[in-house]
Amino acid sequence: MKTIAILFFAFFLLAIQTDAQIYYTRTAKVTFFSEAPMENIEAHNGTANMVIDFSKGSIESAVLIKGFKFEKALMQEHFNENYMESHKYPKSVFVGQITDYNGIDLEVNGNHEVNVKGEITIHGVTQPLTTPATIKVKDGSVQTHCKFTVEVADFDISIPGVVRDNIAKEIEVTIDANLNRLEQ
Image 1 (tube, rainbow, N blue to C red):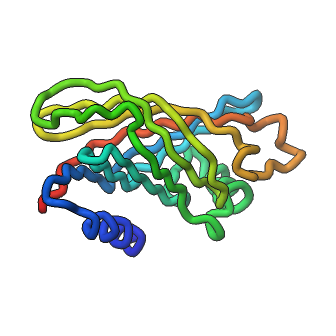
Image 2: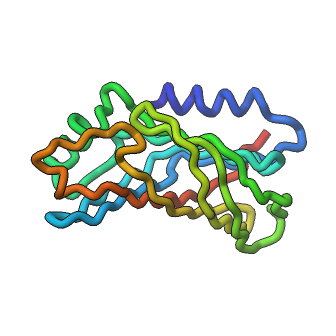
Image 3: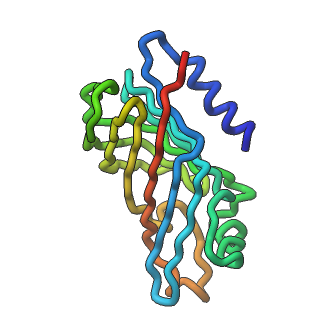
């Protein structure tokens, strides 16, 4: 995990310009939830990486699949081994842009409703993703929030026939992050 984090941030350090306004975190919270007839499924991961370059409006995020924690250990085991195959596809990545970015003043406290567009890779499959997001600037820090839905079938995640009717076909994903400025 440390290797992925180091490589992830090294890439951005190489791209820094003197006027760049780069904010990052290694503790973004990713939650997914699916409402299913037999049992709701919910998992949390508080170790996602996120980088936003406010000088360009670009955003990148990565989360390790094995970092998701479930209430039930068996559910977590099935998630990693049978559905997400985390040994084969260890992370999910999003790369995109704030599409309606007009230059957020990071010196002024306030909430900014934006749209984010890019590509998300889950289970080795890349799909386009567009979602509304909130960026909150408060006393020099930046908080982000977004919620979107993904369809399991869009990412070639196989659900065994025995439990197919018990697992939702859509998963609600929520991402919350508190980012700090990368000092140059």
